[in-house]
Image 1: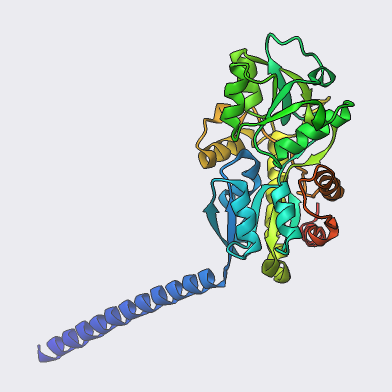
Image 2 (image 1 turned 135 degrees about the vertical axis):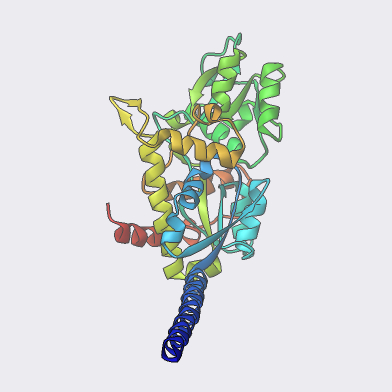
Length: 355
């Protein structure tokens, strides 16, 4: 009996010891797993992006939501802005690594004044065959062509803005100049729409989806599409001077960005027989954009801006813009576009990404 009791005690002791050991092993494995996760998180490189909640930021939204940045070892932090110019200032000052916004006279003046940043990729352009920005007149206007706007009042957002540039270039493409009309700065897109509806101006420039909304509501008609008149790099991706020097990280960012531009293009910009057709991921892309811009998917689907499938910048257009702003006395001094354009980083990223 004593032997049996002794054996029982020994058995219970061994079992208890085993359970403790197992518990210690589980805790050790859990700690190791947590340490590995922390180590993985610490290996991600932080990148700060400044941008607006606009449809043209779609590739950035997609790169975040689809995990393209994380795949490249990047931990992206988004700083939301309310206007374009502060993004350029923040990028040049190094407050953000990457800026995504419109390319304006103020940006060129900032660079001409000694600030440093580079434009590296496409973020929206005017392209023939795609509705992006158009000149509209009231629905009952007699104006049928740009030439007929001589002596008329045209609403723009601000002096030196992308809208100012497009209006000026559109007039020139049709034998007129800014001196032949009265340009009326109205400060905002809603301001343009309101003055068109109330007929306080004879024409305005509007982008999608606002063009479609005006046409649907019946108070305006399109006279000319900007993209059918000339190609124009309306907005871009900027890198700060310090981020450009981090070539490996910069290329990883652009590799993720190119994955996103391809995803976007294939979903919403593919054409068959000259007509746009919905890609496999159309609804997903539209819903992601809607979530980020706080708009209804139906509105987003009405106006999806053109972008190069690989995110390539229309580099030659940058000098064209600079020269026009100088001619119009909107740029204080001449500027060499090669000082603010860098296409090599994206080329390297695309080489790594492949087709």
